[in-house]
Picture 1 (cartoon, protein in one colour):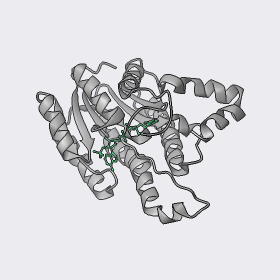
Picture 2 (spheres, rainbow, N blue to C red):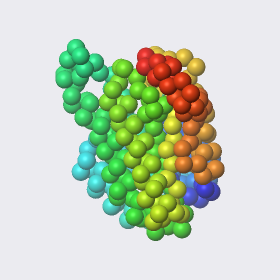
Picture 3 (cartoon, helix red, strand yellow):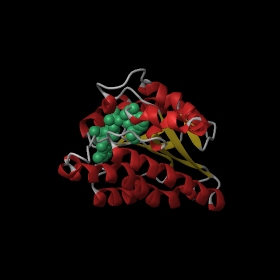
Length: 249
Ligand SMILES: NC(=O)c1ccc[n+]([C@@H]2O[C@H](COP(=O)([O-])OP(=O)(O)OC[C@H]3O[C@@H](n4cnc5c(N)ncnc54)[C@H](OP(=O)(O)O)[C@@H]3O)[C@@H](O)[C@H]2O)c1
């Protein structure tokens, strides 16, 4: 997929992997519609991008706002051809000691942002993408979609949900719209706000963005970035070890 002059929607574009994706896409000559909540950061990014970044302040946790944004997005940007569902949050929760019950609101928001918003954006945008000569959707997941960790069960469930959703969406496009490429980007531990203060040997956000975009350009359906590439063979050959390694990640 050639990203030069493509119009690309990036969710979670203000920080971490999404900000790095945005920088790389701009450098490759794409126009970026940058979506996140922080309007000031988005405006700052737009100022630096010489007219090639459209800020799109939106809270993906607010269902009605997401639904309304889809229609506005398409009327203002009919040339949109690539969607990267990158925004995500991670909530640690202990279900045994009652912490999860106390934080149910946060866990529901996590499900809305990580899974429901991805479904809503794909539902609203895919018919339009199918009308374009070439198009792509990339949904960002994690090694934790394949092997969960104990401290964030809902996060892992949302990522596993996005993984299954993306594969089923790919089947639909293979049959009815083969010019729409549907990919899952499986990321390893990346050095961002989400992982601040934990983990070692983290990938930089820029390297994660590079790996994702290279996989997209190569037309891969499952884009394993960095160390995440070791997971499928590990889980096939030594599943117990694979699950143990990520259990306390
Ligand atoms: N970091 C890792 O180790 C790692 C590993 C595997 C997978 N991933 C996945 O990679 C993706 C990016 O993660 P990251 O590490 O770059 O996270 P991050 O640094 O915490 O950034 C998250 C981004 O999502 C946006 N966001 C959060 N809540 C939002 C909401 N309600 N509405 C709209 N935007 C929202 C944030 O912008 P605002 O605050 O401005 O809204 C920010 O731009 C996520 O899907 C994550 O699950 C990360």
